[in-house]
Length: 189
Image (cartoon, rainbow, N blue to C red; front, side, top):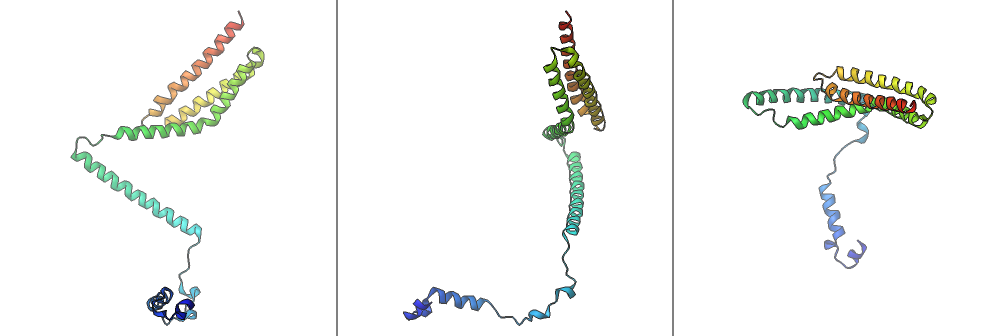
C-alpha cells in the first residue's frame, strides 16, 4: 500500500480497492459477545455414543422403509409385467458367491487344520504306524467339517447350500479315503 500512496495512485491500488470492498461488505452488527451463555441455552451437543445410537436407529428405519418401498414396487411390477424376474440370475449368482465366501470363512480354520494334518500324514507315510495318529486326527476333522456343513446348510431356506457344498465335501472325503486305502494296500503287498 505504501508503494501505491507514494505514487499518488491510492484510488486504483488493488490492495486499497480490495480493502474498500471488504469493509463495505462486512457489516458491523451490534452484538454483545458476553450476552450469550451456552450453558443456559439448552443446546448441548450429544456425546459420540448417543450420536452413534441415533444414527444407527435412523439408518435402521431408513433401510426398513426402503425395503418396504422396494417390495411394494416389485410386487406392483410383477403384477403388471410378465418379465418381472428377468435378470435375477445375476443377483442369485452374487448371493451364492457371497454364501460360498461365508461358508469358506466359517470353515477356514477347520480346513486349515485338516490340510495341515493331511500333509503331516503324507510326510510320515513311509512309516504307517507313525501316520496312524494323524490319520485318526484327519478323520475327526473330516467329521467336524461334515457336521459344520450340515448345520450351516440346514438353515438355508432353498437348500442350495446343501446341494452345492455337501457333494463337494463328500468327494473330498472319498478322495482322501481312497488314497489312504490305496496306500495301505500297496504297503502290505
